[in-house]
Length: 394
Image 1: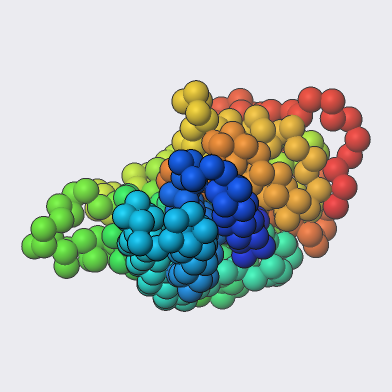
Image 2: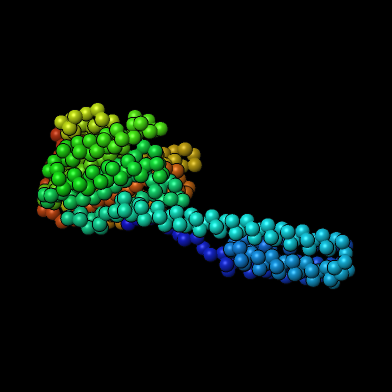
């Protein structure tokens, strides 16, 4: 599931009746008024209002009607030889032409943005490759919100791929910066992830390969105007085997995922986190996975910092974990819709930064007993939704 816009902007063509009605009303009232009262200058409102509702052609038509109405008023109030009426006609003609010109420029700009958006959305589909809704025993839903609305390309990334063995690999990450400048780094990480998911049997080997690819890419841009030390990618890489509830993750400086199990939300903090990709500081042997339990019916919610750093008009950050704990956790699409609607309500519009959310549910597996961590408080924080007592519906 990808949500870019919930509601399409309504067409304003039906509202063009308003400026047409204004022309009629102003003309009739001016004709019936004494000759020393001049309402003709108000006719400029009609083309100006039309420009905000329709295109240049319709605006030009309304402008012509407004000028015609001004001529009719002049004929019935002393004739076209009156200097005042001539000045009003000329002024209305010039202003109407100016409004049409501005409207034409706006339409041309809109066409350019539409072409750029089309190209950008195609590039985004090639880069991100929307995850399949079903992969192995998993059900997947996703959401991507880009900060640069004109291009719809941001610095967040995610991908889902099958490994050579019976397992699904998942990555979600955030390139430093946002918009078009982050495409190169994101493409390097995603390409290395898709190739490495099939090549490497273990999660540490895959993460080490991602680090090598990013560092190699940074070496290639070391002589450019950008400081390679300012380039890095936070990433969360997971291995979700088809059989059994045991899963693994390696967190490279990324916000921790949320695990939903029996109406309970667990924040899976990494016990052995590693630096973000591109820091080029640690050997491959330093990438240690953190195990966690992912049973049938459990839901993983992965996200980027654009979600939790989204601010309300009063400056408050979005409390994702607390809000997810209050939602009915039933289906990935349903949960994603709840988060999306609640996030927009919290911000009061679109988030200022790129934001991505990936929701994964395990649907088919042997239901095994859920073992407890040896230290259940160490690295994990649990949240229970208020008023929740019934089992989760799946």
